[in-house]
Picture (tube, rainbow, N blue to C red):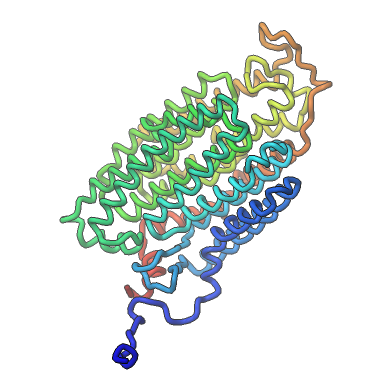
Length: 524
């Protein structure tokens, strides 16, 4: 037939014709591992006793893959692979640089520690309702968001972890959980809609969704394209995902309602994905527009910092206190985005990694305090020092960390951010960071004084707390020790993390290595 004798089509210009390098599998392993183990957990849906063990094995493998990927990136620079043997920008790319790999590793550690805590916190009913499959699905979305090189697939991975977070929010089906999940769903739908509108507008402007392709094209069409509109839309959409002022009202309405281990995952991870997306889009894709928006971002950062910590001071429920401290920390991270210098961005990246660990630890601390003292309320908690000096020491170290005081991890990123603000003559921004740290110290001091040092119960509490008969959750305290160790080590030996943060910041500001990883030798 004529078709059979026709000349074969040469696809070398659009497809990869050689074998797939082994390192490509390392790039997608952090997405494949939790996805596969989540499917395994569904297969074991009638064997609830195996769920915790299977999830821990999967998350341990995830941490190992993340660590190997970060090591490879630090040694060889950004890595990229494109799905389906298509060359970029035709295929969907996964691209790992120092920023994405660092965040992915920290997120994997947080999830692994929370899975250990869940062995005690999540009962058979919670497992039957799918806690561990939801956890694995959420980590699939989180890892995918940090490693994707395609902005539409960033949207897809956002949807994956948001959908799984709905399941974790309503676990238990209590009235407060349903109420919190409803607010969370509706308000996140608004942010997601803005994200999708901006992405459609982006595709109409550039004709591509590959982030490396957009970064190189934006340098040549900045005069004709509506880049300021795109940057502003992404600032609003990702600012809402990160819980930045004035679109942060969804977080304090929902984060205090789920099981405490789910709240720890949310507080540690979800807002940091919004910060990551802001860094990736505004710094790497739209640097000129970010500079124009810098003052606006700076004042949003100040408002988020101050109003967040004032909200924490006004609360008596420990979960609500920590929810507002999550918001305040988002403001601190946005300060580095506003400054846009390598030192400022390095401080933001370091602070984000620190915040993943410290906010997870604080929520788990609230869970252990509740188990020992019988309440989340500061009006009812008292005498925990006599019940557990170990827990008291952990709480003190975590309070120092979140306030940015030595010897814990919160000190050095704030030093970097204050230095960057002073160097840029943004004294008002440096002052806001320092004031936030001072007010955070007071907020944590209230918790420490009421719950740990106070001997007598609050007025009106009928039952007197007896430290001698208080529960001593060994698993919970052990998990807190595991989290506290790196928090202290990052404060005492910050140099390795600062080097990685500097590399990640430089990669954002000078994206040639990222672009070359996707389009080798200027190809594509």
